Image (cartoon, rainbow, N blue to C red):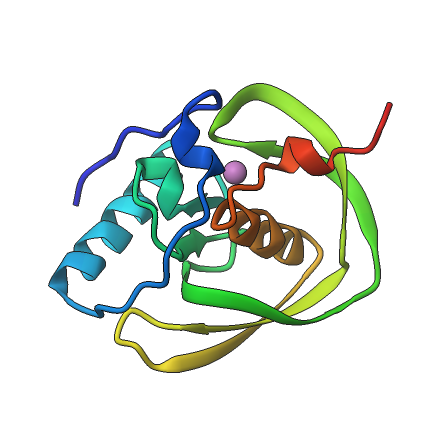
Length: 147
Ligand code: NI
């Protein structure tokens, strides 16, 4: 387990579309462990692979009720709407209002490659959307409400 460097805005890595994760091996497990360490150390509620310089489709989220690992996540349902303040470990010292669905359902794989469905509401839905955006090179500031 180790704390990785978090890539900051201005680095091209954050703007790339990440590739599907195909190998569910010890290396993936190691990276996921490091991502959780890095997220908790930075007191974030989510971290996506490109934020530690890895252009693959996976992320970790913990909005206070336990760690969730999402490999190759896809939002398959969304409903409702929430507008609230959002930040990002890659965009330090900023917070902007962003509109997100109130509830989402995500299809993904776990670290062993098993298919999972995860649902989130409120902050968890916001975190899922934010992290999955990272996998497509999208930052929350791109979606921020116009002031
Ligand atoms: Ni972020």
